[in-house]
Structures are given as C-alpha cells and as structure tokens.
Image (cartoon, rainbow, N blue to C red; front, side):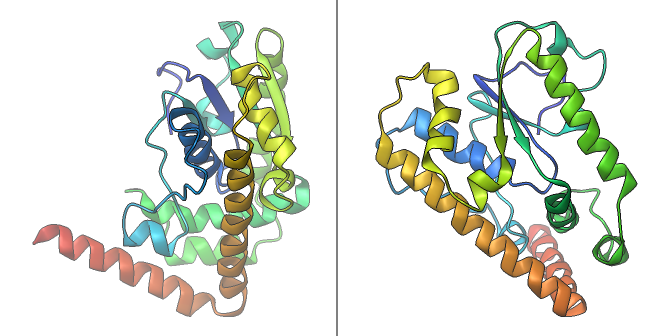
Length: 230
C-alpha cells in the first residue's frame, strides 16, 4: 500500500481491505509490462502470504493500490487532474466477507491482529469502522471524479463472475481503448475467479473450524519468524 505522500501510479486502485485489490493490481501491472504473458499467475512471496491467500504488487508505479484511509480528506489527490482511478465497489453483503478476509490477511503485517481479533470479526454482526470506511470510499471516489478519470467496477464482476469486458475496461482506462492482448485479459479474469474461490474456501474453513485454521496461520507465522532468526 502507498500513503498519500507517494506519487500516483499510471493506474490507481481504490478498494476495501480484504477485497483482493493488490492481486488484481499485480495482474494488471504484468499485463502492461508483459502483455503477451498470457498464463501469468502471481505467486505469494512466502509461506505466511500463501497460508493467508495474500499477494504483493511489485509494480506500484504502474498500478498503485490504495485503501480508503490512504486517501484522506484534504489529500493532494483531490487537487490532481486527469489521473486514472479504478474504484472497486462492494455491496453491503460482500463487505462482511472481505472484512473477515482482511483480518486474516493482516497477519502479513507487523501490526497483525491477534487470534481473538479475528474471532471477534468472524462472529460480529457488524463492523462500524469498516462500514464507515466503505462510506468514505464512495465519497472519496465522487470527489476524485470531479477532476480525474474514475472507473467504478463491481467487485463481483471481477472476482465472482470474472467478466473479461470489465477487466478490459480497467486496462483501457490507461490504454484509451487500444489494449488488444485479449488472451491476457481472459487470463486475468480466470485467475481472479480462481483467487476468489480460494478465498471463499478459506472463509468457509474459518466458519466451520476457526480454531484449527487460525492456529495454523499463527503456527506458520512463527515458523517464518524462527527461520528469519537463523
């Protein structure tokens, strides 16, 4: 993630934590740098990322990722003009899913949640903070829209339905309708659906066997930490 003191990328993606925006940014970036790599699949950088279904985007200068809090009120982004933004929208029902996935994926960071934090989110009826963040995303997108190119896309169209035309519209925000590597676009759509199915599998495991799943995640975290000390 980049904070608001960083330069904007060629594409800038605004999305809720846990909504796999970094994964799609990785794939879009590779489609720019190597458009004929038609079977590209991102790889998690280590075992912690793998067990939590998380990815990295090594090409932030191309597709830069932002969560709503990174685009704060008064940010310089609202003064920019003609910057390309992709706004990934979740429905209220989807927010519960991506909220829980966010709690799991935070284990990749130094300020990771505890097991109880994940359980609390898993069983909570609502997350007011997460809801406010989503509301701010919608407002921020409207503010950005005043001077910039903002493309609204449904999260489900990318990760549930894998709609190639939606992926192509994201690419053509940068290429002005001239992107022609359609096999690469189809691969992005296919990989996004595959990524979501893996996330959904993890989510269901959390629902039915939370202690086993969470304990395993923390076991892997400890293993990676111990290996780093050698």
